[in-house]
Structure formats: structure tokens, C-alpha cells
Image (tube, rainbow, N blue to C red):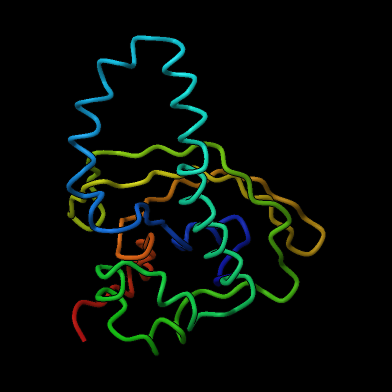
Length: 182
């Protein structure tokens, strides 16, 4: 975990997430939505769509869980490859990310991670970094954390961006350590 009180630990921007696989989804998503929207008025179609979408929507959440698992294990070199390009630019260098990414304290652990919701958004604006992205996955996760003898449960919303071969997260350095360029 990062420094400061345990209550403020998770304000350190541990992760944000990335969503769709393959660049082709960037072009196909609007076309597919225009075809499917009129069909959404039929209950049977909605039930079928929900059944089919389940595995697809689970993928971004799986990505977030893997990112946090690596974080808890201190595998920052592996995490670097899971960052969106904008986040990598903000950190500056891979070595900087590995050195300065907040750590979990030795007597802390993630007890549970649950997916509360997943939504695929046509666009999303990251107001903190003044950027707008298309085809974003918004994932709300519930974490249960133990630190010493204390347990905390909190929800965290993350956003994932589509990238070739999968998703990427917008895990930026904390505000006072933002880096631009190399």
C-alpha cells in the first residue's frame, strides 16, 4: 500500500482499467449498436443478449482482477504492459513505474474482489487528465482489504481502454507525481 493512513491508502489511484479487444471493435461497435437497438424492445431478445454478453462483459473485470493481483504480489514489471499508452506516458519510464508505484504494506492483503457492474460506454471523459476516450469499459469493483487486524470494504470504479490483444488500464501516478514525456 502507499503511505499515509489506511483510510487514505486507496485514494492513491491504484488502478483504472481498459476494455475491448482488438482495434476492429472501434469500428464495428456503432454499426452493431444501430442494428441491435430496435431489437431491444423484445424481452426474449434482451434475455438472449444478456446471456451472450455475460462472458464478454466479464473480460474487463477479469483484467482488473489480474492487475490488482499482480499489484498485491509486487509484480510491477508485468503490470507495466497492462497500462494504457496515456498512463505509460504519464509515468515516463517503465523503471519509474516499477520504483514509484504504491506498494501494499507487508501486513496488508486483498481478501476479496467482486465485480459489481460492467458497462461498455461509447465514450468517457477523464476530467482529471482532460482526455476523452471511445469504446470504454467502466467496471465497478468491490474490494475487501485487511490491514493488521482491521478490515475495509469499498467500491472502486475503473475505466479500461481497448487495445490490440485486450484491455489496458489508466493507472496514473498520483497527482503530485504526474510525469509527461520521458
